[in-house]
Length: 156
Image (cartoon, rainbow, N blue to C red; front, side, top):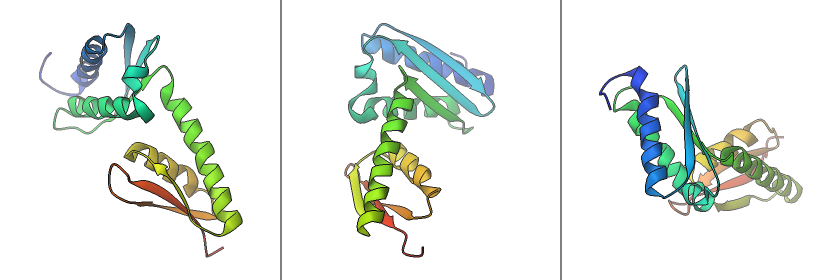
């Protein structure tokens, strides 16, 4: 692995993911695509549950490591690591959960607490619900029990 800049970031991410896949004993292919200041990495194979982990905790940790090796301490690039389409499925599930919570908050005029979730998932839900004018969101608690609260917007 060569030390250095921008052109090596994707290769560093690829090498990290190949080591992780091998270390977990998975049979999978790794592909990495760089565009602008972003690196998208995809792991494809059968039975990638071990890589994804419970509620995506393992893949989120691997993504964090990939972000660190891509930046190599200097540049900051967005890095997304996905496995078998997990990110899209998770986003869809979180959006459904967010819609349900928002509707309950509006209907009952009470705040609705979601289950504890990681920072990436909380950010996704915050961003998703931001466009609605009828609710606002906030995070409460401390890791690993930090969760999102959806409140009816009192200024409607």
